[in-house]
Image (cartoon, rainbow, N blue to C red; front, side, top):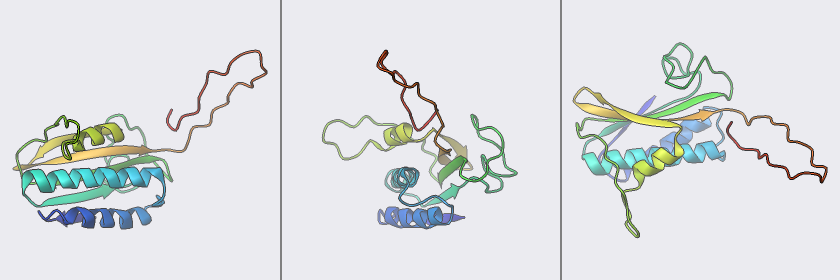
Length: 171
Protein backbone atom coordinates (compact mmCIF):
# COMPACT_ATOMS: atom_id res chain seq x y z
CA UNK A 1 0.00 0.00 0.00
CA UNK A 2 1.05 3.53 -0.60
CA UNK A 3 -0.11 7.08 0.00
CA UNK A 4 0.23 9.84 -2.55
CA UNK A 5 1.32 13.03 -0.84
CA UNK A 6 0.69 16.49 -2.28
CA UNK A 7 2.94 19.52 -1.92
CA UNK A 8 0.82 21.11 0.82
CA UNK A 9 2.54 21.00 4.26
CA UNK A 10 -0.80 19.79 5.73
CA UNK A 11 -0.10 16.53 3.90
CA UNK A 12 2.47 15.66 6.57
CA UNK A 13 -0.32 15.27 9.13
CA UNK A 14 -2.31 13.16 6.68
CA UNK A 15 0.76 10.94 6.17
CA UNK A 16 1.10 10.45 9.93
CA UNK A 17 -2.59 9.47 10.24
CA UNK A 18 -2.23 7.02 7.33
CA UNK A 19 0.88 5.51 8.92
CA UNK A 20 -0.88 5.08 12.26
CA UNK A 21 -3.69 3.17 10.54
CA UNK A 22 -1.13 0.93 8.80
CA UNK A 23 0.61 0.31 12.13
CA UNK A 24 -2.67 -0.72 13.72
CA UNK A 25 -3.11 -3.42 11.06
CA UNK A 26 0.50 -4.62 11.31
CA UNK A 27 0.52 -5.87 14.87
CA UNK A 28 2.67 -2.99 16.07
CA UNK A 29 0.88 -1.23 18.90
CA UNK A 30 0.51 2.51 18.36
CA UNK A 31 1.82 3.08 21.89
CA UNK A 32 5.00 1.04 21.31
CA UNK A 33 8.25 3.03 21.11
CA UNK A 34 8.80 1.49 17.67
CA UNK A 35 5.54 3.04 16.42
CA UNK A 36 6.45 6.45 17.80
CA UNK A 37 9.86 6.27 16.11
CA UNK A 38 8.31 5.23 12.79
CA UNK A 39 5.83 8.10 12.91
CA UNK A 40 8.66 10.56 13.59
CA UNK A 41 10.73 9.16 10.71
CA UNK A 42 7.75 9.37 8.35
CA UNK A 43 7.06 12.92 9.45
CA UNK A 44 10.66 13.93 8.74
CA UNK A 45 10.91 12.21 5.35
CA UNK A 46 7.54 13.49 4.11
CA UNK A 47 8.32 17.00 5.38
CA UNK A 48 11.61 16.94 3.48
CA UNK A 49 9.85 15.85 0.30
CA UNK A 50 7.11 18.48 0.61
CA UNK A 51 9.29 21.39 1.71
CA UNK A 52 12.50 20.86 -0.24
CA UNK A 53 11.31 19.50 -3.59
CA UNK A 54 8.01 21.25 -4.23
CA UNK A 55 6.89 18.00 -5.89
CA UNK A 56 4.29 15.42 -4.94
CA UNK A 57 5.63 12.27 -3.31
CA UNK A 58 4.63 8.68 -2.59
CA UNK A 59 4.92 7.19 0.90
CA UNK A 60 5.22 3.43 1.36
CA UNK A 61 5.52 1.30 4.48
CA UNK A 62 6.57 -2.35 4.47
CA UNK A 63 6.26 -4.75 7.40
CA UNK A 64 7.78 -8.16 8.11
CA UNK A 65 5.97 -10.76 6.02
CA UNK A 66 5.04 -8.34 3.22
CA UNK A 67 5.99 -10.04 -0.07
CA UNK A 68 8.66 -8.43 -2.19
CA UNK A 69 10.24 -6.25 0.49
CA UNK A 70 13.38 -6.48 2.61
CA UNK A 71 12.84 -9.06 5.29
CA UNK A 72 9.45 -10.04 3.86
CA UNK A 73 8.51 -13.42 2.51
CA UNK A 74 9.70 -13.76 -1.05
CA UNK A 75 11.51 -10.45 -1.34
CA UNK A 76 15.11 -9.35 -1.42
CA UNK A 77 16.80 -8.96 1.91
CA UNK A 78 18.41 -5.62 2.70
CA UNK A 79 22.09 -5.47 3.63
CA UNK A 80 22.53 -6.51 7.22
CA UNK A 81 19.21 -8.35 7.37
CA UNK A 82 19.37 -12.09 7.08
CA UNK A 83 16.79 -14.79 6.55
CA UNK A 84 13.03 -14.73 6.59
CA UNK A 85 11.18 -12.99 9.36
CA UNK A 86 8.02 -14.00 11.12
CA UNK A 87 5.86 -12.74 13.92
CA UNK A 88 7.25 -9.69 15.66
CA UNK A 89 10.80 -10.08 14.38
CA UNK A 90 11.96 -8.37 11.22
CA UNK A 91 12.51 -5.09 9.49
CA UNK A 92 10.03 -2.28 9.00
CA UNK A 93 10.86 -0.15 5.96
CA UNK A 94 9.63 3.33 5.06
CA UNK A 95 10.13 4.83 1.62
CA UNK A 96 9.34 8.27 0.23
CA UNK A 97 9.71 8.69 -3.52
CA UNK A 98 9.48 11.99 -5.40
CA UNK A 99 10.14 13.25 -8.90
CA UNK A 100 12.85 15.74 -7.95
CA UNK A 101 16.34 14.82 -9.15
CA UNK A 102 17.91 16.90 -6.36
CA UNK A 103 19.63 14.54 -3.88
CA UNK A 104 18.92 14.85 -0.18
CA UNK A 105 21.35 17.12 1.62
CA UNK A 106 22.23 17.08 5.29
CA UNK A 107 22.27 20.42 7.01
CA UNK A 108 23.78 21.38 10.31
CA UNK A 109 21.14 23.38 12.16
CA UNK A 110 22.47 25.80 14.70
CA UNK A 111 21.00 26.97 17.97
CA UNK A 112 17.42 28.13 17.56
CA UNK A 113 16.98 27.24 13.88
CA UNK A 114 13.69 25.43 13.39
CA UNK A 115 14.75 23.42 10.34
CA UNK A 116 17.71 21.43 9.17
CA UNK A 117 17.56 18.50 11.56
CA UNK A 118 15.47 16.04 9.55
CA UNK A 119 18.19 13.82 8.11
CA UNK A 120 20.13 14.00 11.39
CA UNK A 121 17.05 12.59 13.13
CA UNK A 122 16.68 9.90 10.48
CA UNK A 123 20.36 9.00 10.85
CA UNK A 124 20.05 8.81 14.62
CA UNK A 125 16.79 6.85 14.79
CA UNK A 126 16.89 4.44 11.85
CA UNK A 127 19.01 1.29 11.81
CA UNK A 128 19.77 1.98 8.16
CA UNK A 129 18.82 4.67 5.68
CA UNK A 130 19.80 5.87 2.25
CA UNK A 131 18.56 7.07 -1.07
CA UNK A 132 18.70 6.03 -4.69
CA UNK A 133 17.85 7.56 -8.02
CA UNK A 134 14.57 6.33 -9.43
CA UNK A 135 13.65 7.39 -12.96
CA UNK A 136 13.93 11.16 -13.05
CA UNK A 137 13.52 11.39 -9.27
CA UNK A 138 14.67 9.56 -6.16
CA UNK A 139 13.58 7.29 -3.34
CA UNK A 140 14.67 7.93 0.25
CA UNK A 141 14.28 4.97 2.59
CA UNK A 142 14.92 3.99 6.17
CA UNK A 143 14.64 0.73 8.08
CA UNK A 144 14.10 -0.17 11.69
CA UNK A 145 14.76 -3.69 12.89
CA UNK A 146 11.98 -5.06 15.05
CA UNK A 147 13.07 -7.86 17.29
CA UNK A 148 12.17 -9.14 20.71
CA UNK A 149 14.18 -7.92 23.66
CA UNK A 150 17.24 -10.09 24.11
CA UNK A 151 17.28 -12.44 27.04
CA UNK A 152 20.39 -11.92 29.06
CA UNK A 153 21.57 -13.46 32.30
CA UNK A 154 23.21 -10.99 34.60
CA UNK A 155 25.74 -12.15 37.15
CA UNK A 156 24.31 -12.46 40.60
CA UNK A 157 25.67 -9.75 42.82
CA UNK A 158 26.96 -11.10 46.09
CA UNK A 159 28.59 -7.93 47.35
CA UNK A 160 32.06 -9.14 46.34
CA UNK A 161 32.11 -7.31 43.00
CA UNK A 162 30.38 -4.51 41.19
CA UNK A 163 28.03 -5.67 38.42
CA UNK A 164 29.27 -4.31 35.10
CA UNK A 165 26.62 -5.58 32.71
CA UNK A 166 23.63 -3.67 31.47
CA UNK A 167 20.47 -4.75 29.73
CA UNK A 168 19.85 -2.94 26.47
CA UNK A 169 17.03 -3.11 23.97
CA UNK A 170 19.34 -4.17 21.19
CA UNK A 171 22.06 -6.76 21.15
